[in-house]
Amino acid sequence: MSRQAIPALLKRTLRYALGHLLVWSMCVSQAQAQTSDDEIRVVAHPDVALQSMSRDTTRAIFAMRQRTWPDGRAIQVFVLPNRDPAHARFAKEQLNVYPHQLQLAWDRMVFSGMGQAPHRVRSLTEMHDKIATTPGALGYLERAYLDDAIQVISVE
Image 1: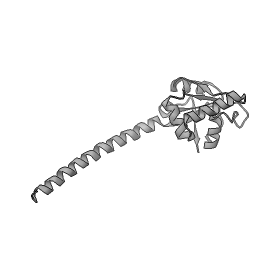
Image 2: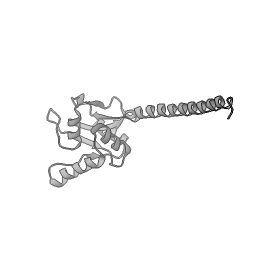
Image 3: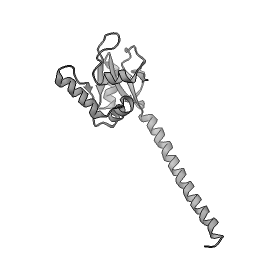
Image 4: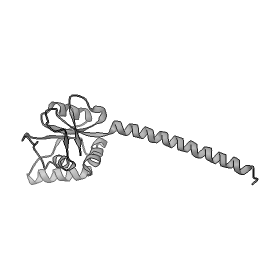
């Protein structure tokens, strides 16, 4: 290979690498934009007096171990089906558990007679409607579904 061929080969390799880097960075930017829209937030009926909860409290409520709000009113928990991608993201991102672990906790409560499973909804739209119209309700929604009819509860 001649001395002149080496710089040409390096230029081609550099252009190829930069092109791939540009495409990769565009994909990452698009994924980050999509992630912010798909971000799952814990939401409640506007009459719930809390603005934030600890992760442990959130886990206890969604595992159906904590059944009342601090003011003594019943918590109405709403969840999507186990196979729904938003439910899986919520369980993993907000509760740090897998959906099947939540289901096992609910099954134990029901079969032992110590409690009941949460209310199931079929879609994020139905989740929004139930949270907005059920006093004491708690659930989760993607950012795109948030509005003034519900309140966001931060999990710390």
